[in-house]
Image (tube, rainbow, N blue to C red):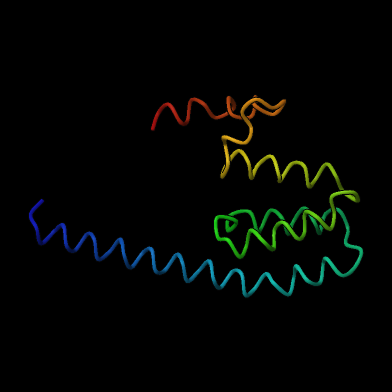
Length: 118
């Protein structure tokens, strides 16, 4: 790869990063009214589960994480199994160290082969 290819590659990566950041910001804008709605009324278990599923891919964004936590806090006692599942998935995906030494450490082994192949 010569220097021109390297510069083009870096430009493409920068543009991709900008596009992803724009998508994440747009997701925050779109999900905010949904989160406010679901947190201000009694939502069904399926509604909460679906919303958390849709939001999960964006929780790497700090603003989306705040919205995600708002839904989790609102429904922690109403639908504990749903909220616990998403909290554990969050820890597994974004904060693996937090599971070490807990009864949920086994979650880290579920995809061990995947990480070993990388």
